[in-house]
Structure formats: C-alpha cells, structure tokens
Length: 114
Image (cartoon, rainbow, N blue to C red; front, side, top):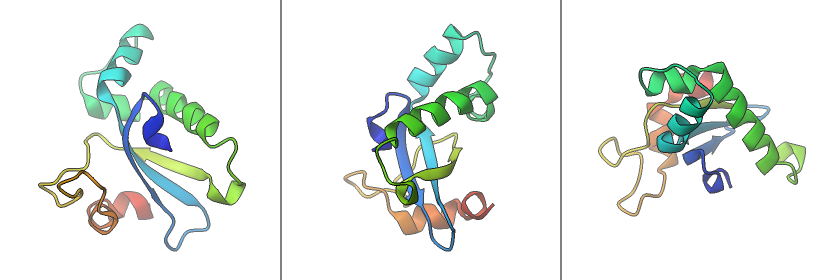
C-alpha cells in the first residue's frame, strides 16, 4: 500500500507485541529532495531529510490518506523514516527484492521497539 506513494520507496509494517501498527518507511529520496528544494527546506544529507518536521508531516499526511479506507486496527499509528533502503548485502531483501521481515526487524530492533 505505502509503496504506491511517490514519496516512498519501500516499507515494512510491524506490530509484534505492540497495541498498534508501526512502520519503517524508506523515502524515495529523489522525490523527497525535489519536495525539499521546492519548499526551501535546508538539508545536507538524507539524515537531515528523514528527521525534518516538514518532511515528517508530509509523509504523515500521505500515509493517513492512503489508509483512510482501512479499519482503525489495520492503520499504522507510528512510523519511522529511515535514511537508507533495505539491502541484499544486509540480508534485508531477497534477490527478487522482497523484504525479509525477520532480518529487517533484527537490524532495526531499536527503532521498532523504541
């Protein structure tokens, strides 16, 4: 669902041992950078972008719109933008680029449990 948005490149929804769903979201940095330049948001790197309040607000509004027709228990309540895509080198995706949830969960455990 989230990967259909032009500002998102990849996503993994997570809900283990949580009362709500969270998501790790990988921005489409080409489009996020264009948005930032258009909105005159200063940034030096991807870390600046994924932590900027205006970028976070943009993504929040877009995921809320994408989820509008879902029942509340299926909606992501919290998300984290990460500054890199999932990689095969880190074992996070298969050769066909499917997300390996267990590996991503292990690699981003602090983010998911925080």
